[in-house]
Length: 387
Image (cartoon, rainbow, N blue to C red; front, top):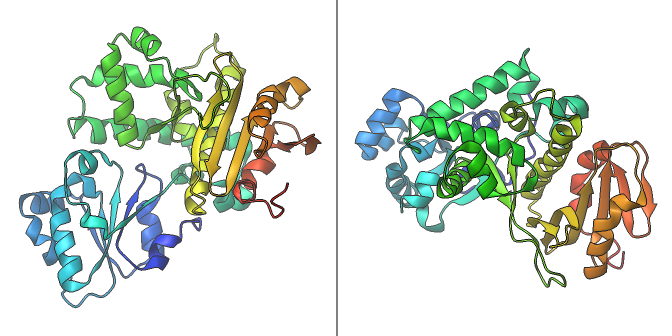
């Protein structure tokens, strides 16, 4: 059992939404941190059917004199109960935690989102700082950071089951797509775009579906918190920039499970995308947990010069390039140098598969394992603003 870095929601003491993909540990964390809470699980068929038919029965599940937290798990399954949650906050002063593995029905259904009375937070797969001595870069690149991976004797089997279960429960049962076979083909094809610029026309051709459906499926992945698109950084651009986003599945292990591999696939293709994906998922989590409030993007010019990750916000501008190889040449920093020319205030980092830290002019070169462990430090504003 790992102590999670997410601490702000409970410390603030007010009702909140907690979103995150299934299996990232939302309920486990809540049971650790507020064991006296009343838990209402909408994955329980009887509870779900009762509240779906009569949302007003929500109060029947909570003792009238209860003063602790009330946790409603998977609230997106019955969004109509949010009106009742709102009423209880106002009338009885109860504090709710509303967990969800999908924001789709809440966002698109026009339901009551508690009129600002509940903040929104995210739970991610485990990060290196939570794993401590159990963080193993090689294992992370194979199986990712879903909490169950670190207790399951057969992590690959767990990931296979996770993907199938998620498809069945979130896509099939909710009726989110009419053709599950085309969605499965899309998932496999989309895995080839991991950590790459999206080409929806090519994905549509490879999956045998039309471009409009491809766009809908990518929206669906984001709604289900299974994947996300990263836009191009264009703020005060001095060059002609690329137009299309990059795509990532939310966890390296899920990506590796979905990505077909065979004798024609090189390790560089799969492991390079896996390494960049691991850095990205760790950075997104640390950005949330530290309340750094960076917007995350990437930088790519129309001529192909690229920086893998750009973090921009009130704490500054950070540019990160990720290289799998243990040996580097100065050419590996070409994109960072161009970025530094255009944005002199940027703090630039090159993460690589070697073991020594180096300093190339204004670019810091870090072993990627050290860098992942130190992302909180890297995202923090410099102690010397002139640096």
